[in-house]
Image 1 (tube, rainbow, N blue to C red):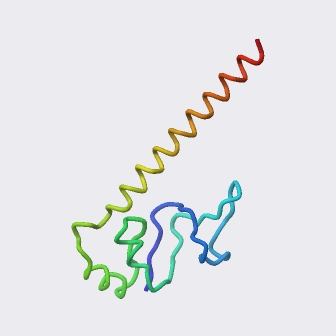
Image 2: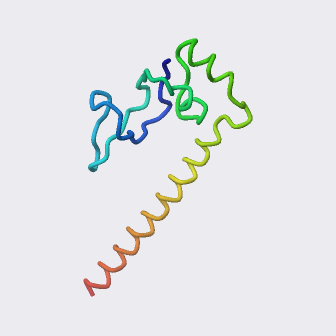
Image 3: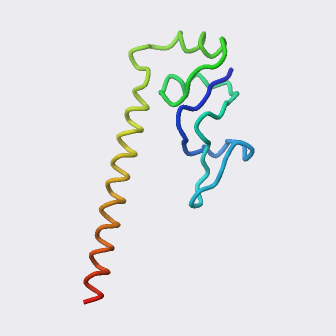
Length: 102
């Protein structure tokens, strides 16, 4: 069963090194990477990938279409909140550096 990632995402611990790259000590899989895995349909259902073979499309059709993409929405919200937090930390550090310079 095959799918293709819609965006670059963090790699799980079982992802083979051959499809990963490392950035800031974290392993990622690049957008557009084709994955062959028994659970590929789950990535599609979650909104992280698209089916690229009939087996994946058939398995996906068995799932509740009303839930499709919900995990992607949650993921996007978490990523936005994480970025907001990191931006706040950076602003605080810059403010502290300015106070130290005075």
